[in-house]
Image 1 (cartoon, rainbow, N blue to C red):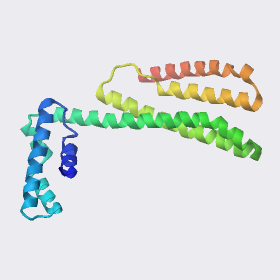
Image 2 (image 1 turned 135 degrees about the vertical axis):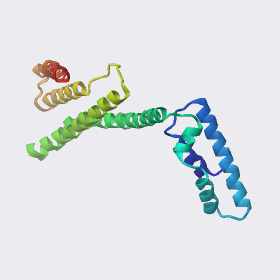
Image 3 (image 1 turned 180 degrees about the vertical axis):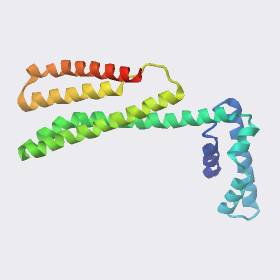
Image 4 (image 1 turned 60 degrees about the vertical axis):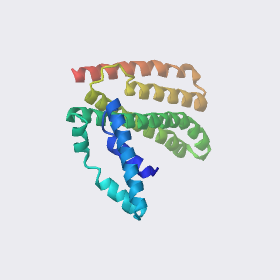
Length: 207
C-alpha cells in the first residue's frame, strides 16, 4: 500500500468527527483509492501520475462532508477539537521547558558567579524571563481555547504557577548565594499574598 494515499486521506478527514460512520467511510475511500492506484500502475503509469490521478478524483472536503451528512457546525467543532489537541501537546512541552529554565536559573547563577555579578545575574534572570514568557503566553492561549470550547472545569491558574515557581527560584538563590535559608522561606508567604491579590484583581476585571 502506498502510504501517500493513506496520509492524504487521513489529512482530509482530520477535521471531521471521529464517528464510526466517518471512520468506515475513510477506510473505504483508502481501499478504493489504493485499488485505483494499483490499476493505473498496471496500465503503465508511473507512481506520480497514478497518485495525481487518484487524488484529482477524490473531490473536495465539502462534498465529502455533505455525503456523510456532517453539518458545518459539527465539522467546525471537530476542527477546533483537533486544534486544541495540538495546542495541549505544545503547552505540555512549553511547560516542561519553562520548569527546566526556572530550575536552571540559580544553577547558572552559581556557575557564572566567579565571572562577576553582571554576568551571573544576566544568566539568572534570562531563563526566568523566558520561562515566565512561556507560561504567560500559553496561559493566555489556554484561556482563549477554554472560552472558545465553553470549558467550565476549574483549571490551574498559570499566573499562580509563575508566582510560586518564581518564589522557589528566589528562595534557592537566597539559600545558595547568601545562605539565607532562614528567613528566606518568607518569600513563600509573600508569594501567597501576591497570588491572592492577583486573583482578586483578575476576578474584579472579569466582572
